[in-house]
Amino acid sequence: MTRDDALKQLSHIARERAFGRQVGSDRLIQAGLDALIAGVESPSLAMSQRSAAETGD
Image: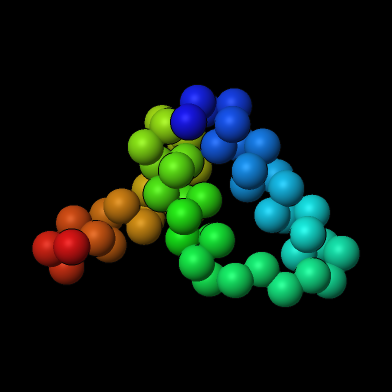
């Protein structure tokens, strides 16, 4: 997945949530992992990565 693909995926999920649709945690987690692997810079993603490193996951 490219960086642009990951950003589109996150944007699509954000629009779904903005329109009141339920977005499953599995989709949110997968989108976050895809974005991290694709190199998307975000303070929220950085916190997730740091938390995982701290817990040894």
